[in-house]
Image 1 (tube, helix red, strand yellow):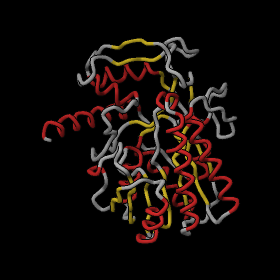
Image 2 (image 1 turned 30 degrees about the vertical axis):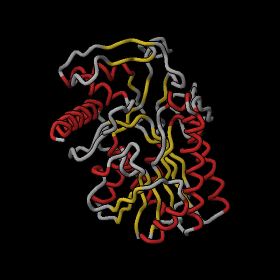
Image 3 (image 1 turned 60 degrees about the vertical axis):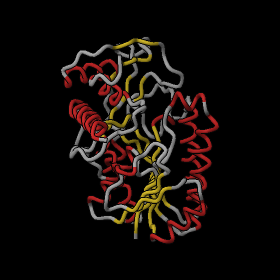
Image 4 (image 1 turned 60 degrees about the horizontal axis):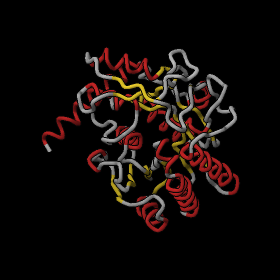
Length: 330
């Protein structure tokens, strides 16, 4: 029996595929390679190139490889882009996810792990944010993910399907062994962009908004290391295989850092005092969002191993250096 990882050639999905392969699981990756890379797929895994909304391809892949669980990561994830292209986000993140869920049910797959997001909470006065905090997404990205949570919730009531939806906060860092990391050149993740700026690949780091009601005026976020996040998915898979019920859980450390604080850490770790440009707020960005993350520890027994911002920043910087050297060789 195998695990299907949609988006497994990308950043977070790639780390999940690697974590599964590391513990000897049979892994099948489905990715259209629009933002992912075939070289990022673990050599032990099978790569199927295609669209996760293609129900015929999905049914064939599930049948041919004996898929017993699906970890669904394939999605569009850029908040400002979702504001300018809402229909594209609803198509990719909601409509195609609905097709995937339907095909899973029809094909007899009973275990489903969904890559959701803290963006489902939107602007909230709660800090930290618990799973029970009212959902008020302020971007089509957050709404598209919340809609898929609803689809899973309703489908699991009507069919023999159990799921764990993991609401990520801000994912950062890279595989501690240096095998994979965030590889999309135009990615908008703060720590990646800061690393690129420290290495001279960008002229300056742009900070969007310095007038938020936070301790230094910049946005406050909870940064979770990507391998810790992959291990949370392994714990979710184990929970479902044991017959555990459906769950929706936050994935974060429960501590927030501001954008300007992250910039300072990158400058210190890299030893480079790179330029910073202060710009107006972007649409769709909440002022602060930090996880209340005790439930995932209680329900899944998840114990983070990489809760250290300096270490996360150092991993991201090392991966950017690796990509730069890889580009020179290519």
